Length: 386
Image (cartoon, rainbow, N blue to C red):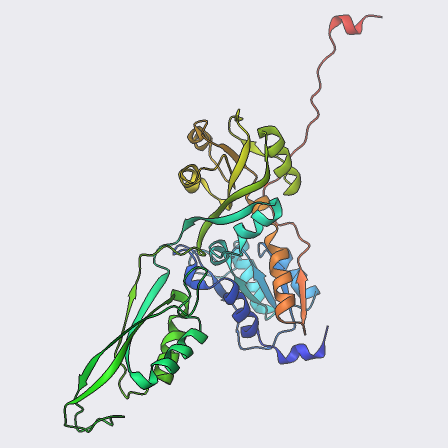
C-alpha cells in the first residue's frame, strides 16, 4: 500500500466509476451512487463486492479499505430508522461507525456498453455484440447562435468535452448562417454593438448533439467559450436510438452449438451450479441474447432480435412457456450472471488509479444455496439374489 494513497480522495474514485457507468443512465427505480459516507475524505483503499453485507464491511476493515464499491445497493428503499433490526440497518451502522463509505453502481453499469452485459458477452466469446433494448431519451441536442468569427473556436471547445459524437462518428454538427438582431438595455454590456441601439450581426446557428449525462459539462463549456454577455441557446431531447446505452446484449457465438452443448458450455464458462432451461431446440444456436440479473422482461426483445437462445436469471414458472419453441431460455441464476462484475471493476480501477489498494472481495454473497443429492435406486429382487 503506497503512502501516496493519502493524496487521493473518494470523489476521484467516484469520478472514474461514473465515467465507466454514468448515473444518468441508471433505471428510475434504482438507488445508485454514494449511499453512505463523505466523498471528500481521503481514501485508504477500495474493496469491490457484488453485495455489501456485514461480513463484507468486516473484510473492508481488515483490509484497511474505507470505500466499498458494491454492484447492488444495500439501501434500496427508504430507511425510517437505523436501529440495527435488519441486515440493511446493521450494515449501514457498521459502515458509519468505521467511517467506511459505500458506493453502488447497479443499473448504471447494467446500461453501460462495457458493463455487465458487454463483459458477459466477452466471457462467452459472443461477437458483434449490440444493445438488446436501447434506452430512450439518452441523446440531447444543443442549438446556439454565435458570431461567424467565433464559431470555429466554440465548436472545437464543445467537441473537446464530448459533444458531436454520434455512434461511430465524432465532431458532428450542423451549421447555418443567418442574421441575428438584439438591442441591449441600460444594464447591458454588449460585446458588439451599443446599448439602446438595435444591432444586426451575421451569426452561425450551431446544432450539436450530446449524451445526456454530459449536459452540465456542455453548458459550462458553452458559457465559457461564447463571446456574448447573454447566450441564446435551447436544448431538446431527441428520439434517436443510442447504440451504446441500454439493457442486455445480443451477438453471435464463434460457432453454432446444439442445445445441450450450449447449456453445458455456459454452465462451465459461468461456473453455474445449475442451469434451468426451456424445451431444447432442434436447430443449432448461433445468435445469443444475454441480460445479467433479472431479465424476464426482455424475452420478447430477444425473440425480436432473432436470438436462438436467451441467457438471464430469475425466470418464473410461466416465463418458460413464453419461449414457445422460438428460443432456448437459460436461467443461470442471479448471482452467477453478475459475479464477474467484481473482477471487471477491480481491473478498471487498478488501471485508472495506481497509488492505493483495490481489493477484490473474497466473500461469496450468493443468498441462494443448493443441495446436491446422489440418486439411489433400490436393487431389484433379481439383483439381491445370490
